[in-house]
Image 1 (tube, rainbow, N blue to C red):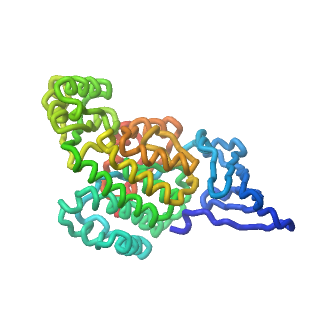
Image 2: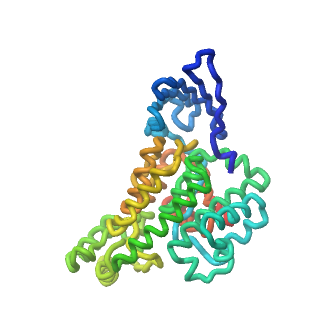
Image 3: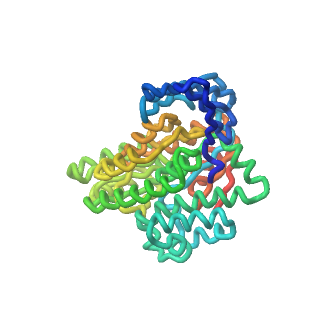
Length: 386
């Protein structure tokens, strides 16, 4: 995956007290120039963005003192997407995934690296199951992360694949898929991303085990009606069973999370609100709500210890449907993500309204392709499965 990351070239000036570094982002080929004062450990960097994809608005500045680097978080605010890479989240897993990836050495290598980090044979579970083991949060999250990045290598190996990868100028992922998108965009290494995803799955499972919770998809209502349905259900249950919209997927499909009794109340009342149907989700608990709060501190500690760089292309956050460039902001948002509703509908609508022309869904399943078609039937999206 080396081609995804930045390659620094250091030029030393005659003065012993200053260093100029030029960083070339492989997909942007745009220079970043920084001057470092070694006496104070301070760096000021200027980067010229001439690409029309990002507004072509000139220069942004980052500053660092010691090891702390601050990047202008609004760097990608005026992004103009043309080609997007989408990565799936939990629920996309299926027994048999990963088999095709073994035909490409670079993809197969990802599973070998994963085995060393995870301590078990991930490919064996992906390819052969059993299904209940693959569906568990602690297995499915790393399985989807690895298989999705293996799909990138499958694409790279085909004729014209590298050109497609290089043309991607925005990326995002559904919940867990945000980590995959960040790895693809060079914000962290494959290995560091997998370690985070492993811990995330474990922390979310522990939080789910601490309370009787569930998730359900409500089909056939707009978001306002689903909110009214949640309000009605909440009138009948105690505080620890309250529910809320946890995932704004697409028009007519919203996931609700909360206590089991609250979810049962949603299911019982859905028909009276004219919902077409409800579907109980096969997940461990009430993801993207306050019930996941116990997972936040573990995630914060792991993120603090992880080197995160500014992504080379915009990565749209699930929390606010915006791209972020500052590594410290990205860390805070990833920690908040497990307790915050997923703003996927807003993300997709924003990308399409900004002129997105072609999309690719990389990884197991085709959930995202279905969602995008639901938002815009004419949207062009290709599925790259692994």
